[in-house]
Length: 250
Length: 178
Image (cartoon, rainbow over the protein chains, first blue to last red):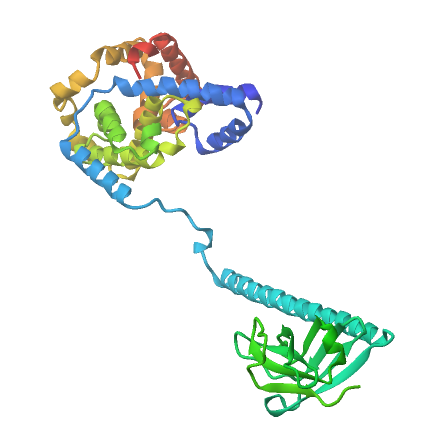
């Protein structure tokens, strides 16, 4: 059929009088023909006028009441938004389970990557400090002192390296964890003088601790180094027990 | 229609009050049964309430949409009824008698007169196919069978009749006030 054939069918379409096959063909044509759609609109206006030819009849008041009652029911009920997944079957259920499993796996993967990344960062940091430690050891005139765990710190070990300028670095292993709000603090002990305070540090979960410090000039002649557990902010004079101490001056 | 789409109950009530007698008259003409017609009338306006958002002004006037919807639901109901003759017998006399004063006031008889006058000017051979299609929901093939006329002839008469009706009503749409 050509365009003109479809145009001829439009008045009957406005009256819904086309047979099924013709109606389907015209509907397909209307989808792609704006001109025919406009023409249909005009014919529908004419057809609608036929409704006015009927005698007007007053419906009973009950219809209005019932109508508004239904409307109020609708107003009390929030509009329902169709949800596609409501039509579930075995495959969509498997699909959902698969999606959930994928989410769990993805989450696990992300967590794993974060852990690995943190481990990598920690290892890289440790390696960098170790290199720094070795560089300080290699500095002419530097000295290395070993500290050993005593009493509560039994099993722990540490090495302190410092040069003539007082640049010092401590590396400790197998340190017991410290309570919340506490930290290890380094002390420089010269003769019978009161211990001179160094910096504080907190070991990691593996008991490893590293710290850089600047030793007081007077401490360069230290005979003994000690580590105690003190408040995290550090104290000017030791208050806690000694965990590690050096045995002798190198 | 926009207010109804925005769930304005008063707007729907206003639309109902304005067009109830026309739509109900149409449904009574199609169904010839008050109970059925009232049931469909409620369905039609409830559908307007729920589907007002679908109304597209570019595709026609609200009145046309409402009447087309009413006719369509009326024809659907007609087809589901087991025996049109039985229903017709039950309600045949009601139609004319139920025109109330209020309905007459609400509906301008002048408008009805214009359409009826236009229809009266159509030759019977053109008017009958139109009436059978519009109020009885018959297809062209069914009309041809009913009238004992060739299908091609029915098609031509129907098209010619509607074209003539359009010509007769041309320029009078404004007076309809829809």
